[in-house]
Image (tube, rainbow, N blue to C red; front, top):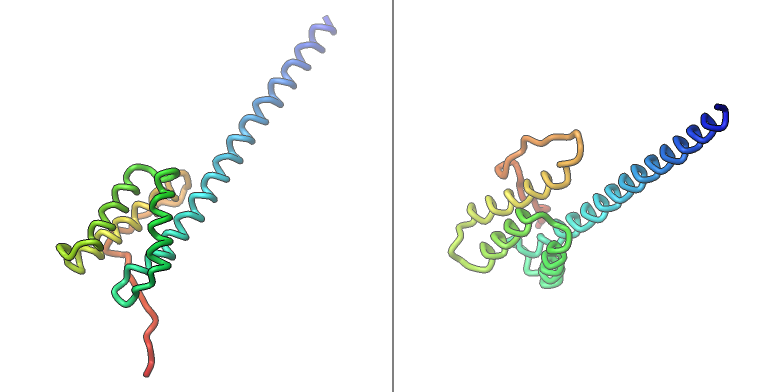
Length: 139
């Protein structure tokens, strides 16, 4: 009887250890994926400045387009569609300035929702809450 109990305890210990290891690895992969996504989104947002009215920095624009291409690897479909909508808006003059700001705000909200979807933090912000600010130049 003691042998069976010893075998059962050993098997349970191995199974519990395996389950713990699997859950730990899943958690690590999830955290690494979040960190990678967060870094990519940060670079995307940094380089979007190339499209502001005051800017014509082709380096930023090129970096933004590179980040958009990388989004095909890690972003959900709604982000890619919002990025395409934004690029279409800045490519043509058929969109008003207000329309472009709305599209950019919707993109930022979609990015925020994607990053926050697995956290307890919830957002009630809308595209109207996103503003573009620039430093005032003193003369």
